[in-house]
Image (cartoon, rainbow, N blue to C red):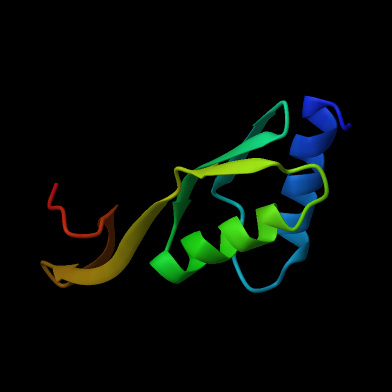
Length: 92
């Protein structure tokens, strides 16, 4: 059985290696084979893709996907462009 730090490292490497998602904002924790993913991604499909990637790592026995899917929009205010990043379906 892998140690918690070995399992966390293996999942992190797998997420970074896979070109289908941007894993820079995803955190990984591991304890006794249970992996927890946290952070945020730009879509629900990326959230579920991160889960699939983590589950294929040897030693993962269960997974909690606490990743938040956030919309990123561009808007114009007073002639200047700015980016809004917020949770889908929520206004801040």
